Every structure is written in C-alpha cells, then in structure tokens.
Image (cartoon, rainbow, N blue to C red; front, top):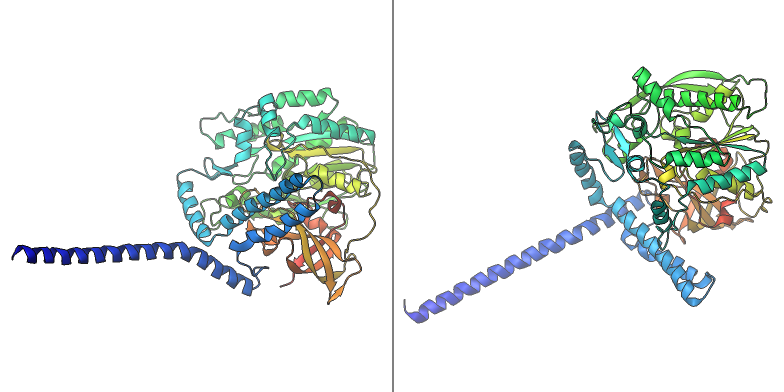
Length: 566
C-alpha cells in the first residue's frame, strides 16, 4: 500500500471514529436530558391524575405554584403602610416566605423523594442513625432531637444563648422572645390582678428519666437536666411563682419499680407516670390550700387497652407495619361522668389547665392513644371536682397562653371564677420555645360579621381563600395531625352571596404525617366546603396542633369547621 492510500484509509477511519464519538455523545446527552425531564414530567402527570381523582384541590402543577405568590406580594406592596422602600421590603418578605414554603413542598411531595427517602432512612436506621428530628437509642427506644439538645446544649439562660436566640429571626420569621422568666412573670402578674394563682409545671422529657436507653454508658440513676434549670426555678420562686416539678418522683419510681416511665418509641410518658403526676398535683393544690373546699364530685372510670406506634417512629418515615419498631400497648384509666359519658372540661371550673401534648396524650383521640384518659382527666378525678382546660400539642411556650389571650380579647372571659391556672409544658420548651408576651386584657365581644353555622347545622358554601396559616412540613414535628386556618371571602351558597360573605374556617392540613390537599391552598384559590360550627367538633379537635392566621383580628373571630366537598 502506497503512502497516499494509507493516508486515505486513515482519514476514512478517523471520520468513522469521529462519527461514532459524536453519536455516542449525542446519545449520552439525550439520556441525560431524558433523565432530567422524566422526573418533573412524571411528577406533573401524577399531580394531574390526583386532581382528576379529587385528591388535589388545584389543577396547576406544583412546579408552577411559586407564581401564585405574586398576587400576595403585589397586594402587600400596595397596602403596606410606610414609605415606598418599606413597602418593597414588606413585599419581599412575602416572596421569601412563599419561596421557602414552595421549596419545602417540592421536597416533601417529590415522587422520587418519597420513593428514595424510606430506603435511605431504613439503611441509616440499621446503622443506628436516625434523622434530623429522631435519634435512635438502645433496645428499640427512640428520642426526639430537641429533647437531647436541651440536655446536651448550653444553659438556656446563658446571656450569649439568650442574645443569639433573640437575634435569630429572618425576613419572614420574627425572632423568639427567649427568656421564659420574663414571660412567666408577666403571666403571673396578669393572673394575680384577676385573683388567680399560677402553678408552673415544666414536665420532664424522656432522656432526663431514661438516659441509659439513649447511651449504654449512662448511669440509669442519673437525673439529667439543663444547667440553667435550677436558676430558672430559683428566679421564679423569688417572684412568688409556684413551680411544681415531678422529675425526682418519676426517677424514684423508675428506680424503685424498674418500670419504664416513658413510651419507648414516643415522646410522651406512660399512663402510669401520668397518673402518678396528676395525683401529686392534686395533693399539692390541696395542701397549699389553693382551692376552696367543696363536696367531692363523683366520677366513674373504665379500664381500656390501647395499642399504637410511637410518634417518633412515625417521624422516621419508615413503613410502621414493616419497620423495626414494634407497637406498644398501654392500659388506661378512662374517666367518665355520672352518666357514663366521656369526661368533658367545665368552663365554669375553678381550675384551668393550660397544657401541651403531655396533657393531650391519652385524651385526644386523634393522637391514637385513646381518649378521656389524659392528664387533665386524671387531675379532675384525683381532685374530685370539675376542671377546665386549654390544650394544644405544639408550641407549649406560648400556644395555650395565646389562645387564652384571644378568648379574653374577644370578650369571652375564660378566667371568670378561676382560682388556679396550671401551666403544663414540656421542659425542653425552656430552651427552644418562643416565650412571647401575651396580653390578657378582657375586651368587648366583636360584632357578628362572619358566617358561622348554628350549632348542629351543616352548610355547603363556596368561597375564595383570602389568607391561609402556615403548615409544618410532614416529619418535622412529632405530631401526625395538624389543623390550619383559612380566611374565606365571597361566600356563596347555591350561587347566592351570603349576608355574611366571609368566614374563618379550620380545616385538616395534615393527617398521619401526610399533607391534605387543603394544605396547598393559597390566596385566590376557590374552594367548596362543608361547614359546621367549631363548637360541634371542639371537644375532639381543639387540642390538635393548629396554626392561626397572621392577622390578630381574624384570630378573635368565632371559627367554623370545614371539610372539602369532593
């Protein structure tokens, strides 16, 4: 073969190689682009199917939801008070808040994420690793991260800690008021003016009483506590505020009986420990002569057995029935009235309990651990007298005080006839809670301008969402259910505008750690709801974790309960 022929052959081979290389590159690029496109296209197809089947309220694909924030930002720009630049900043805060919520929703609702997360979490669980909210302990025990952080972190009254928390706000979330002493002192003074005694009950958390189940090197007799707690109690008592602490009694009972005081895969105490604490509180109120003598009220009791999975196990987002954490069974002492009906709080009672999920466990049926057998019920039984309660699962640092303040501001005097207010909250709230101040001034009843069905009445109405409260991300809180608030305007019934064309409505936003379609509602969305009076369902639902509308005047409005009409 001569030189010219060799060169021509090499050139032909080079062209072939180049064509193959280009073809391979194009194929790889096509596969890459397909991989990028298939995820959002599959997501959109799934969301379209859910809308067609009535599982989604909105037809718009979630990837376009961010554009629905523009009308709210524009409204803020036009209506906010102050200079032009201040209004721009206000509108920007709305956008930043919506962007953060949009990103959380994309992450939570991603088909790929929902498919991959349980597998990854299962692998981590086998290695003894939990997630950002749940820690894996020993022998099938689980621990809620904020509780561990409370014990292992610095003192919550340390000046640097207080300063850091006070400066921790951002463009859309205000910084907390970090010092519980200030809020409790203010609360105490407001109650004293009404002739009411405050009893503060910081409730021990699981790792305090069972450190040995988190780490085998821990002494089971060690009662752990944050380094600032003693100072906290001392400062409150110096101001005349009673502090009722049951931690030593729970530890002593554990060591004496060898029995667990807390559920293994849940954040809360076992019913035996709860009943012990209720009895001790009843004795304390009696010995301190904080209540007038009265003829004991007779209650009936019934023994029930409940089996359930723990809330921390649910936070791991593993299939509970197939996961490594077994169900737990408890025996409850259910409290009944004289007619064998379930116990109910009495607004005219001389004792008012403000409580969080430690009060709701075994009382709030939606939590899955039975009903009418919780802390407040046991306290009423031990006292032999009626008790009133305001409970909320989350945000024990302020939620129940805020509910009380709203009722008073709306002219509903929840403190009338009260002698004692027991303020029960998980002790970890001292380090992580927002101890905001709450005004307890008694206001005038608001004029009736909002639509609420009469008790026992059911109405189907259509309306437009004017505003909606925030909803926590599933798995980010130790509660499987959540209720949100909606402000609806333009209310119609059978095509006719109502005389009272707006309403504040509570709806389910999360069930069993899964967002409902209502959780994705935004201002401007149209919705059809089956409405009832909130009073018709309050006994069952009032203690469930709930978020309120930002507008305080709307928080004073009597709400309705709504369920989406499919």
